[in-house]
Image (cartoon, rainbow, N blue to C red; front, side, top):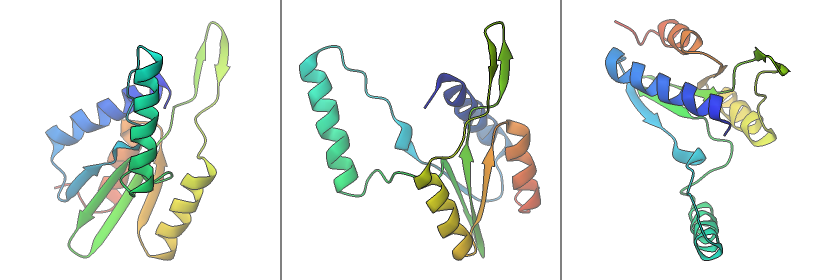
Length: 133
């Protein structure tokens, strides 16, 4: 996860805590970063992540935020917004193949799913889903 996406994730979580939408909000920790200062720490972190994937605790492609309510659910994948800096333009983040597969699975099961690059897009989705009072 690139820094801009981490900042967006942090902003969305802070705003959701304040907004308190009418649903259960589950942030999915698939992008957790485990810092490693030495080769042995790096090896331990890699082993931990591999074990979590094998046990189904980390599932590649699952959206960053899951929303559940009586009679419905939704998923939001946060992507890096497009930006222009002194060094040039940077396109918005694009979904990976596993993220596209998850979105297709959501569609097949009637679960709402969007890709969002801003809090405004998250807010609009929650409003469209009837989750804001």
